[in-house]
Length: 144
Image (cartoon, rainbow, N blue to C red):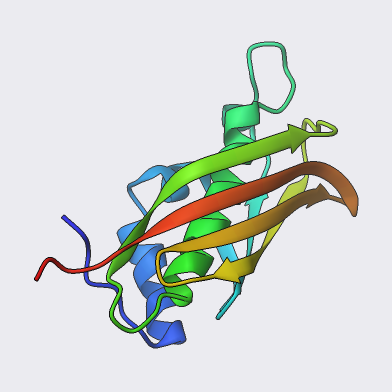
């Protein structure tokens, strides 16, 4: 079931905070910093739950942050007739790791078509690049 997303940005940001509270974004502590057409910035305070058994940041936590930023940005950038999306491709390059502090993901739309959107995201910690991402989102439309 595709949720009915609000189209006004302030309402959408509030909807994400409420709807995502008991889902992965809320469970990982992902927070929206900036949301607009073609962009989304999110943050995550690194906690023990984000670490792998080796004590370093788990790659999946970084992927979740970047993919969520791209996904929220995608929703904020949907064409008027689209009602959702799904990620169909995600590529990540992990460049560094951290064990504490704040991660910030800045996602930017690099292609906004009728069928797909392509997003790049850069995840940083204290201005140090931690990971680079590219996501392809398939846009969904109501059945007619």
